Image 1 (cartoon, rainbow, N blue to C red):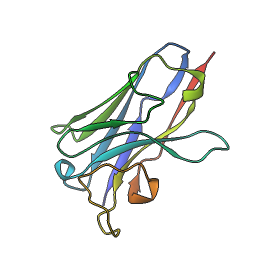
Image 2: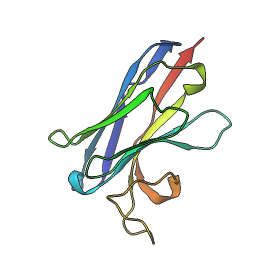
Image 3: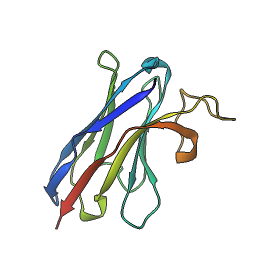
Image 4: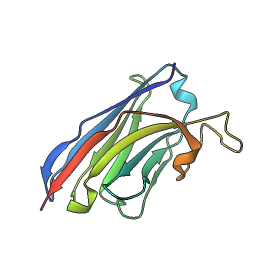
Length: 130
């Protein structure tokens, strides 16, 4: 059974930092990309960052230069270091793994489309105060 456990959220002032963690189990971690998404109240879920199975990172334009994604394959964990946080970063953050049974989805590649991801963590709340 694929399981993803997101943690590390909290309340931080604007300009502060947080590090999110996504611990994975139940699948061959080295073969999968892992994505971070976020959803603010009243808004659609959006892609924040993603890392391919070979370690190539991708970022949304809104977080480039502020967020850094990394992967520790020995720990089956992906991290999202978030610096210079802004109030508009406030959201529930989710990590997810692609669903290889979906047509056109390659599990080792990143995608911005949440519909390509079939396994989701429970979400961790990030609140940035102004």
